[in-house]
Image (tube, rainbow, N blue to C red):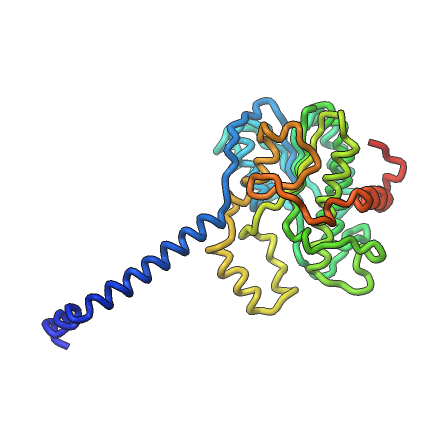
Length: 335
């Protein structure tokens, strides 16, 4: 086609071309607007944390790392509890250089009660006061693995490990009151139920059901802990961070077909929250001044939300507390 012919063709079809161009631009703008909406709000609190100590599990990557970075910028001394010490030290050095705040690193394997007790003992010697404890680490939809103590991995790591850690650090939290315990749960708790007859899925394992149970346990633990810590100055919060593109979903391909795995990661890069936005509700629960007198509640997108009715059961919350005490070997424990 000669250049003149091409020009004539453009002139004849300009209305169609304009319509197509506008449609494409409109679709693009709509997708960008949808992506911005899905990112959710940011924590607006400007609260400073100078002189305060924040302990975060799983803070070497993902939303834990971004939470650590934000709180360090606010002046907090951040203590990272991580299984991979090399990654933790690299992250700590990065955050220290960026913020100037001191960042401590301790080894913690939430799949080992011995490791949890050892880490808690070390913290008792070095951190007499803990102002904020953020139970952030977790595993999601992994194969049926067991912790070193024989617990189903997701319940053992996501709930029982943090349960024991929190109770072992309560004296430091009380000493720092007003202080906060923040438990990173998930909207997945809405699909969860407590499998009281087989908490560890020894009879039949479903990765999704086990994950949802562990996230429901986070909500119930937060509720019961708030009840037991009334008048101590220690408040508790559970939250859904949003659907975030992090390493947490690395085991999903082993639980679903290859297409769903591909779609999860492909669309996740565009539609899921970034780790910065995914950390916002955790940060909100940790610092927002309006929550100082609230305790035991559930949050999402930097706002209080009503959890699933299963997460509001005082009977299940107490039963989980008593069962968890037995499983972690604290039968005689009293808050």
